[in-house]
Length: 241
Image 1 (cartoon, rainbow, N blue to C red):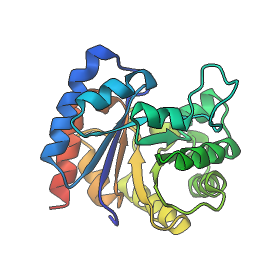
Image 2 (image 1 turned 135 degrees about the horizontal axis):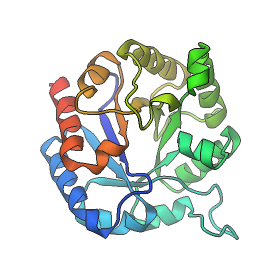
Image 3 (image 1 turned 90 degrees about the vertical axis):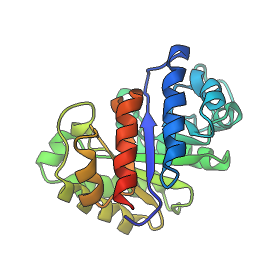
Image 4 (image 1 turned 45 degrees about the horizontal axis):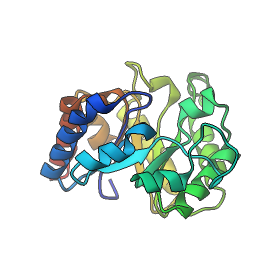
């Protein structure tokens, strides 16, 4: 682990005003464990309210448009996220790449827009099950990194390795595989925090964090549960003491 630990929750298309109590609880947990940076990326409709109850917890968006404004119905710009109270944004998540056919050229344009608006970025990369089975994991991730960053340095950027085949299921890579990918990420982009995402739970988090050589996690479904998310935070804090 090379950098200050970072734990990011991705609520995806979940959450409304009835879930603000979860954010309050996670914010309280974050204040009890100040050695770990904690953030929640919530739906855009919740950003302002989440910031209001989070007690200083970093709140982020889940995507942004590459342009600062314009005729882009239904989209949201990086500056709009910032104005709403976000301090970071997820970009390049596999669900955006797959569901919305986003390629690396679009992702780097969004990344530039986000950094210009003053947002930190968590950039997601990861291979499919087919690529993994064919032994192309390292090649795919290296290419995604190179193309998505297009020569940008790692300032204000964390890289989340999220193997597509591990997201939302019960499969996770061996910690040694995660460590190898974290090393590849750091070799490709200097000065960044390398995170792991993909079915992280309180049960597997300790091994992935301590043996996987990562600087933290990007957590999906477990971040909707304050108790589970706090348990992951606690194991990270315990590991660095």
